[in-house]
Figure 1: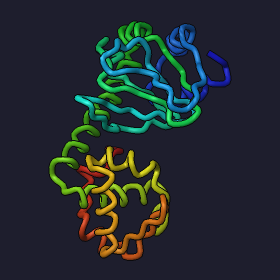
Figure 2 (figure 1 turned 60 degrees about the vertical axis):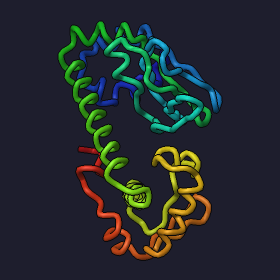
Figure 3 (figure 1 turned 180 degrees about the vertical axis):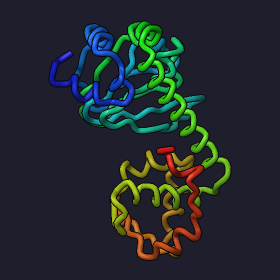
Length: 232
């Protein structure tokens, strides 16, 4: 593990309060690797041999069944995936591939579990992160089950607007095909949904979104912190 990468990893909530001794022990068995775009890093069903940390680039988590594939999430720096499988010593439930040139740190899962057993602050941080992940899954499930596709898209746009600084114009963070998959839609349905939102002041040109009537869009979307605020 290069010394230059240690501060970024240490700065993650997962590692910032654990003892220096235990952090060094984790890093001794870890390594960093550069991957080109579209390289599959993990495959669902495989054993969870490593905890991965995205240091640069981005990774798509996805799942497949019966000839169909869906995008689950995009992991960006600096963050880990997939922690639950590492702690449980269970197979991956999702696959992961690089979306662009990416620098990934790999920490052996057996080392993570060993330190989990002896470092209380590390264990508490892991429980906190897993609890946050669980709450995010519940919110995503509510979004999918309680809202129409048009409501899901409108609330996604409002969330992205907030993440982008709150301006009337911002860029979509992913290509439309992947966005459709994340929202549980087909690309054709997504295209129709964007057109339908024009009546609420939404204009999309390529990946650029412009919202001209904020209040009208919010009245239609009815955003809720119990669904849309992934920080709580």
